[in-house]
Amino acid sequence: MKYCKNCHIVYSSEAAACPKCGIPHEAENRQAAVSDTAADKKTVRRDWIWIAIGVPVLIGVIYLLILLLKSLG
Image (cartoon, rainbow, N blue to C red; front, top):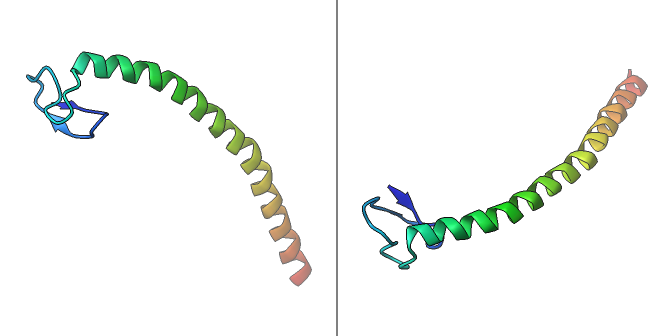
């Protein structure tokens, strides 16, 4: 079974092109390879930014909770 990334349907592996949008399977793979590389780099960069911001924030929240618990106890 093949999956068309353009119209998001699954179709027979025997078909040369997607029955809904008509894009050939090989052309679909070439388009996906080019766009996936750029998208992957962007996603990896965004993920590292979230990690760089999220870890210190998480540590700060835990620290504040510990201080709050000590002041109440």
